[in-house]
Each structure stands twice: as structure tokens, then as C-alpha cells.
Image 1 (tube, helix red, strand yellow):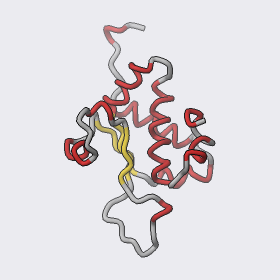
Image 2 (cartoon, helix red, strand yellow):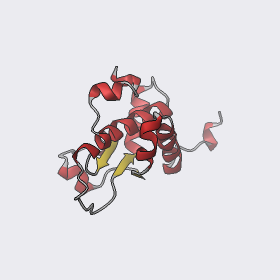
Image 3 (spheres, rainbow, N blue to C red):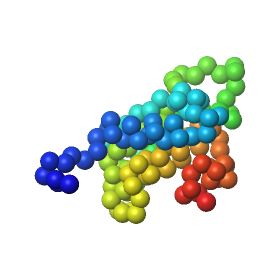
Length: 134
């Protein structure tokens, strides 16, 4: 590989990996997962970090912003669509620090973790989809 001409994966690359993780889900979850808005940013905003009491933006790789399906009511009127935020620089930093997984594996892991919040999955549910939870 020619490192002098190689760029770090950009937001579009991370999005492609996250969408591939959705497409790899079991059929029953694929369509509802596609309905969740996907946002890729370099880092979480200061307001998100402050709300979560996180001082180091490299500590937050992803975030689910919405109401889990297990808590939704047909009477609810959503103010905004459910969204998953993936934070590119934090993911890349974790990937480099780990050194034992591919970037695709790490993005899929973060994506599945955030989808678990959306679907209201237990750890056992997650383990059936993501080997890291086993």
C-alpha cells in the first residue's frame, strides 16, 4: 500500500460500513433498522458530551437518539426521527488502539450496539447477532 497517497476513511466510508452492518442483520430487523436515520460526524457535539458528562470526545463512538421500540406508543407523536450517530474520529482512534479487529468489524459492532438501544435488545439478544457480546 502506498501510504503517501492513502487517506483516512471518511464519513462516506464509515456510512458504507454501517449500512453493510444493517444489511447483514437477520431479515426481521433489517427493514426497521433501515428506518433509523444514520448520521456520521467526526466527534459528538459539545452539548452531547456535556449532557452525557463525557470530557474526552474520543470516548464516545456512537449514540442512539430516539425512543426504543419497546417504549413507543401509537399515541406518541415523534418530534424527530430516531437516529444513530457514529463518531468517525473516535471510531478510528479505538480501531488503531485495538489493533486486533478490522475497521468494518468495529463499525458493525458500534452500529449493532446502537441498534440494540433502538430495538430494546438484551445482552442475550445482541449476542445472537454480534459475536463480541458472547
